[in-house]
Length: 272
Image (tube, rainbow, N blue to C red):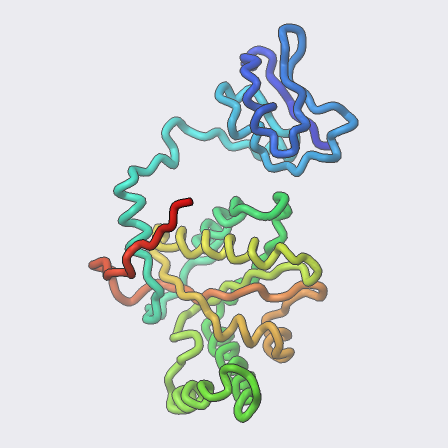
């Protein structure tokens, strides 16, 4: 049963935990009581941690693996708006990679950040498959081409486009994974209609965090499409029963350094 732990020495009875509670189940403190979740409402807690995160005196602890509590140092994570703007504008899809692998520890550090991506109802439905072996990445690219071959002369929207990709592959050009040494696939439960969006949000966290670790990324759309319907590829990825691939991303150490920021379409905003 999930409930909150409150340090009476630190609690100022400010009422913020009650105000920010997503489920609205925390009874506010008064002169004689600390904030609390009534026993009849503990089942409504979604473990989002808002109460803990917004407590200014850090008096409150969500009783969900409390031994894993990490203190937030003063000023940690504060980024100047100019730095944030440049960091995000510099983000590029990388299609040229070095052959040296990204250490597994580094990949886990990035994925650990992705655990904090928003998800519907704090369901956290995303699980990860990392293809670390470059040889297996190449095999997955080949299976994606195999899927494309089934689309030739079909009614599929890509039918007229895939012969060009197949021809390039047969000529020795990896137009699927671009020679990336690694792939990451976000998997989700098959019966969760919200999980697809949750996975894209989590993969976006990976995409944004990766450059800070010296990693370049590119959304692997062809692999993602093939994994949704080509059983040999699904088996190669080892997607567990009851789950499906939401999307895939190729990554590795980028071959070239980003030195500028190109233009984009003018901002279009409609105010209502």
